[in-house]
Length: 139
Image (cartoon, rainbow, N blue to C red; front, side, top):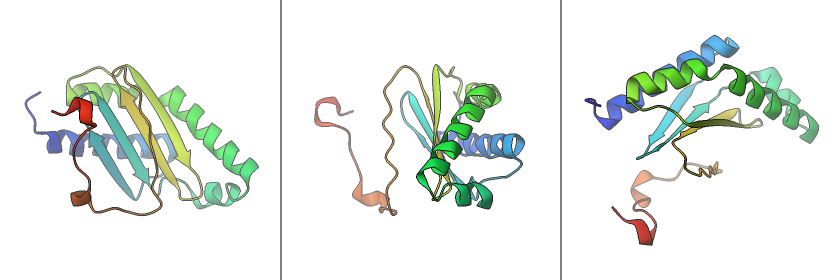
C-alpha cells in the first residue's frame, strides 16, 4: 500500500458515499472513516431518509428500519468490499452494518477476523482527549 493512511481513508469515504448513493438513491451528509491495523469502521451521517426517521420514532418501526438496512447491506456490500480491497490493498473478511434510525446514522464495520464493538456517542468528543491503546497491547 503506497498511500498514506489519510489518503486511503479519504478514498474509502468517497467509495462509501458512492455506495450509499447507488444503493439507496441518497448520499450521506458526511462520512467518517476510522482505519486501524486490521479494522475499518465507516460512519455515514445523515444516511436515512426523512420517511425512515419518521417510521423509526416508535420501537417497532425502528426495528424494521434497522433490519431493512442490515439486509440491504448484507445483500449489496460486495462492491464496497471490492473497493476497500482495491484502495487499501487488503481483502475484507467480515462486514456488518448497524443503524441508529432516530439520528439517521449508519455504521459499517469491515474487519480481518477481529471483534468490533461500536458505540455511538450522544455528542462529539474532542479528538485530543482520546489517545492510546489498552494497557497490555501498546504499540
